[in-house]
Length: 338
Ligand SMILES: NC(=O)c1ccc[n+]([C@@H]2O[C@H](COP(=O)([O-])OP(=O)(O)OC[C@H]3O[C@@H](n4cnc5c(N)ncnc54)[C@H](O)[C@@H]3O)[C@@H](O)[C@H]2O)c1
Ligand SMILES: [Zn+2]
Picture 1 (cartoon, rainbow, N blue to C red):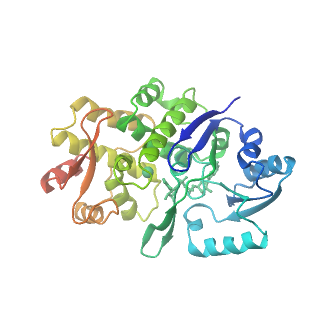
Picture 2: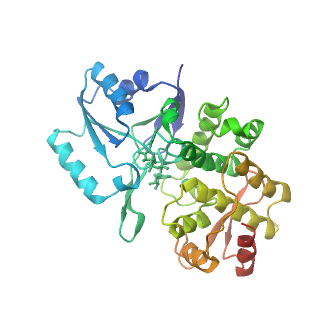
């Protein structure tokens, strides 16, 4: 089946190709004829997927090398980075050669979260002791291959977690996503569903449009943070033991409550958050937290500017806005609702 091509504009434009079973057909073309050596960096445990990609590249005549990195967050470490630099030198990789990342959001893009979010926008980062994603660079890729067939082996909870970002795209920019999911939420909670490809393509298109307009996160990109201010605080409180999307789902419930209580968001759209999130199996409430600690964590979230708390809220469906320094009692009342 042919791939859909979604352009990510900006200073260094590139394409995201979306489809099923497209690695073999599309990867060599994406690598192009400048490269001789191709290094495939993949998460541990994804050897079968990596094997398919390596075979397609070897058949196309490249000299291919596989470099496994630890799965998940363990890969985002300066020690892993320096070890990889040495390996690249050992493989005599030059600037005209190619590096491919294969994995979840840490390496990109074989999880739903990676496909609709991490792989788009060229934002890369590693973790340091002081916090997650604190050191990094904006570096657009030459291209992104999002092969939905790779999601077949993804644990169900990870897929549903990624749906939180898809639903976020629906609320902040493209309500057609919500309509498609609502037609059959159970089917939308798994990669084989009838609308999986369309909602994924729509979510990618939304992020592509935002990052093209705003590569370095000055303004418009801030709306992608919908649900993430409380979401990040919950992730920290849980020591990153719950999937990102589950925390963001609760964060969106909170943001919807703030919007409604502030008189900015209508009741039905606020209520729709809980209905659609629950229908795909995402949490809508959080019982484990202490509000003062979460509030404190929200204050140090890297997206806050200076001393001011900035929350993304909705002024209606697909109408994101910012509330700066919302009243403390309003925040506390919104938290009581989750
Ligand atoms: N750069 C960005 O703009 C951006 C945006 C969002 C998230 N992120 C980053 O993404 C990361 C989270 O991404 P994630 O949720 O995809 O987690 P992840 O990369 O940790 O992957 C989760 C687990 O699933 C495994 N996995 C990946 N693909 C699989 C497959 N097809 N089948 C079976 N297992 C598979 C991974 O090896 C890992 O063990 C975080 O580090 C976050 O900071 C970055
Ligand atoms: Zn997110």
